Image 1 (cartoon, helix red, strand yellow):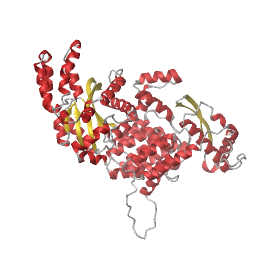
Image 2 (cartoon, helix red, strand yellow):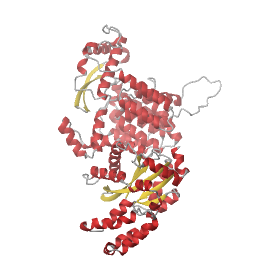
Image 3 (cartoon, rainbow, N blue to C red):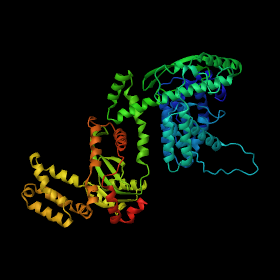
Image 4 (cartoon, rainbow, N blue to C red):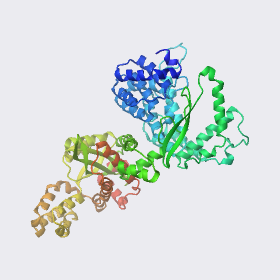
Length: 639
């Protein structure tokens, strides 16, 4: 094994089947031996082994040693980059800080470190989103603020932490070099992370430079393809010229692909001197063939999915498998725009089968349901981040309501409630605070919800509007004792009308109208007594009884001035949100899991929130009343 670690890759490929069998049969391999096994496997790639990446992924999950987990992840990055990022994220969640540091020091230098340490070039094939996730985890495991103590009088030599820190910085540099709006958006998201070690000022500088670089990188025309630095009008004659020309061509094609300007074959036709580049590569390899034991090894066919259909490529190879494609990386089967198209259709309520048929009809793409599920599952990381994002310290009004969905759980389809919290910020803008899926509700459930909101930074709620949710008053009084609980008047009216036949609803609505339009609580109580004694009250005694049962939560409504009443009573926001969500989920039948329901609802809410640009019309008048009613609790948030 010691000799094979540095031997020709072709020799390593001879024992790959035996190594795979040994890894499958022997889960207990010490870290020293595992390092050598990983080195042999990585040098022997690419090779075909059905289900091998699943075996390695399970080893990452099962091992408790962070160093061993790092070597397993190294192998997994060589096999499937996206799967490796997911496995790394799950491992980082369960490790303590020392374990995270040990994992990153083992993995990062061999993954993206200098050429003397690196063993895998897979991260160049990762999407911008995956690189962003890898960068966040790298900063979590190797923090810049960590102090390293070194003995005095000892000659400095880089240790594992130094190499991991260099590798972490290389991930950030690699992200900056990718052109397109996706990189700019990733930098903006990183800027919003509270404890991200790079200051927001410098993140904005990087984003501005990326935008400026994209602006001067238009597609080249055939007549100026050779003017590679816009200063030279001569053909390439030196090795440096050819290297520069090849790099510029890669950047141009990548720019076209990411920005959706690519039609199959058009950009590739702009490369009339491709043969000169190919001859240069062959010359360079042949010159070093005797000492490096490496030479060209033909091409391998590959089909990638793009927003415009399938694209067939012939990828050059060399004998030692050291050639790393820059535009379409190893194991990459989809370009970034394809995933965005699939997620957009999924967010509009299309099922997996409908998306499959849509892609086949429009683009002629044969896509499996498993691939579509894999693409949409990438949203789960965004859902988790969105559900844990920091909140405002105070919300004047928060509406709590539930939406019923059919979700499969333990082999049975059950009716589960999706609880949504819609907050009105101090400036009048609406914001969905979170969603929670539960089969039962009670004080314990709501206590967990409120503690989660408080841990995310929400320290005060002025008015909580609910629809008779069980256990709600007890839980909110424990976490937000100063909050006023207000029964949703619209839901109370609707529940009253549901007790009457269709022909009686209009006169019944007119009969209960004086109750909630009364000027004071005393007048409202008198109107309720009058309704109970009236013809409609005697015909529908359960309506009066329902209002009387919830009267304690109705009374606060009458203490508000008209401007605040109008804001509390007008629940168009949450009603409109529920209507749009029901429109998206109504054709689903049932969801296979809670995660499937969460990712669809998150995508739908993300589209809905894009239309929430203006506060309610009467918000300016209501602000003054909130300041009078709640004093410093409200004004401190404004300031």
